[in-house]
Amino acid sequence: MKWKKALLVIANLVLGTYLVFAFTVFNKPDETMRVCTKANISIDDERTGGFIDVQEISKRLKQADMFPLGKQMRHINARNIEEMLKRSAFVKTAECYKTEDGQVFISISQLTPVVRVKAENGDDYYLDDKDCIMPNSAYTSDLVIATGNISRTFAVKYLSPLAKAIMANDLWHNLVEQINVLPNADIEIVPRIGDHIVCLGPLPEATTKEKRQQLINDFVNTKFTRLEKFYRYGLSQAGWNKYDYINIEFDNQIICKRHSDKRQPMPTPPIVAKSDSAAIKQVANTQASNVKPSSQKEVTKKDETKMTENKADKKKADKADKADKKKAEKAERKADKKKADKKKADKADKKTDKKKK
Image (tube, rainbow, N blue to C red; front, side, top):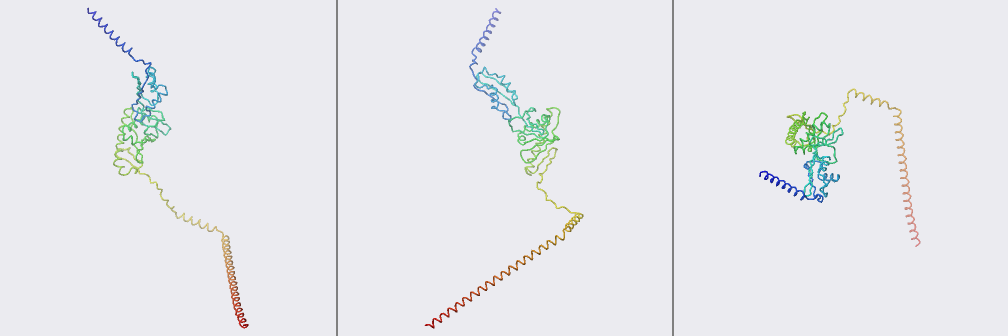
């Protein structure tokens, strides 16, 4: 009897399993007729200054003819979408899956750039948060620019940890505009405020990546805390543009250099020594002695002839004026005489007329 009960239980279990399987298989919607009604694309760190966004991912999927919206669900291969996105630029991880209601979900995490390197040797690239070199891109991002004597090894080992330490603090990230590496490996920063450069000194060295990152984090915290205090209690009162170079390399002291005076100094007259003055007198005497007396005589003769000519011209002009005056006086006298003769003639005519009467 026991074996019959056991056989009945087994038969019931098999029947129940079959019924469940049948319901799930035969009631499953037909994928051949269902299409994708919505494509959900999310980027985990889109707001942290990365290079890609939802529009860029959609563009890449469309170019590869893998954009799921409007396609039949059975033709959408989630694995192929993941592999294609992982191979594309600036993508760290990609996940894709489909749902029964006709939606496709794509989740992406991107490589986050922390600094752009424009070295003096011509290299131009980005460093990401994993201390890896990213190729230059047409996309732009608000990042700190590093210039100067930067090799790729130095960039990966030291510059990338430095940039991550700066980006970890919002105040310092907004303060630093440029990092410059000197030939002796000293670090300079160019702040966004003021008209000066800040020298931090050399970065600490370590053999392991974790130890190096920790030392650089402590280095940045110490230096920037001192710089923040100097800004708050020093430059805020003295003036932001008073100094052009601030050195905080050494502990317990800050070395500042003033702006160089752009006014050119007045030229001082040359000091003439006694020997030089004697030589100058000798040169003057020789120049005076070199003048020929004949030439001097010729000059004086010419001047004298000009003066005599001018005197003669003046005399002639005076004589002509006198002659003209005399002629005018004679003419006036003649006119007066004529008037007197006319009066006499008129009187004589009047007398003769009276006698006739």
